[in-house]
Image (cartoon, rainbow, N blue to C red; front, side, top):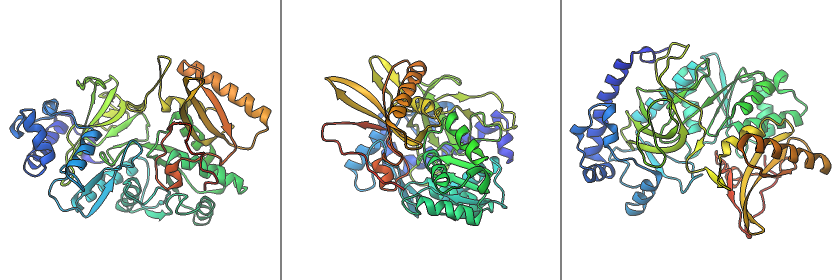
Length: 445
């Protein structure tokens, strides 16, 4: 454990103040996007001295970046003038991908944070890590690889099923005996299914002692299912292009520790933007403390979380963040009831008869807007069993989220998102259905 992870609150905030002042001064001089907004808000660098001063700065949204890209093509004015060595981009599940520059120093710092995350979860130089994330504009794959390498562990960079077919992924894991699997929750579930289709027992026939999941929601039910099937400890890892390797679970698995020597997290009212105190759920806002290129100041990530100040049994003093309830921009309203995809998934994962792929489809039925849950079965089912299972799922959804949704169950492999078909990491779980919407993509890996 690093010394900073056990520092006092006063020591952490003093360090954050020094780093924040340097970041603000750099942005004022070199990043027109922020200087223009701060001048319009009547704020100058000397007004921002400590983390407590952050609410003086205006919030920034993805729509602000979108508009900046239109006004200042091709990369926008939010990048700054530092020369990038690598460009990453948001995954595009909530809009067009947005590019973000990285200098070598930025990437080195992110690798250190990723290594910290892996170390806290028990990865050592003796491990061999199979990374089944994409190698693309998305930063998650490179983060996992470079963090493992920084730690001294070995890496098998097999990529997604679009890069290395799933049966080949399983064959590699069986033959070369990696000890850590790095994946999205949905693809880890898919690999579970493929291993069983190949006549293998994931818990018995492989060497994984840990599964590192990221990039998607991983409800407790999904975590428990993966842990049971693979006989491995499962760690959920929150992050984004804007907050790369910003948090990590420790062995206690009671929330995410925030790397507060690299980021400042705030929680604000989703409607007014007013800051919330620790313990109150709201929209996550992120400020970076190290970036030479593409710095972030009070960026609204959109996830609904709360922050915790109470100490963790592991001894780390970094603040912790709660599991993500959902995204403020993904909440659906049906007959006055709020419906979050993450809450639906928690219910779906309690049914072992159901498979990994699922969607919420919003469509008009008889002139009334409805939300339909579409999900694959884990195994082919006779029509009568399928109908009975759909009814039980709908009943449990009614009890858990307060509204009855129609449930449609498909054969294994019948559903796949356009994102997965293209090899992108995150699947858009909400589909707006029109009369001319395409049919689901079939025959996925």
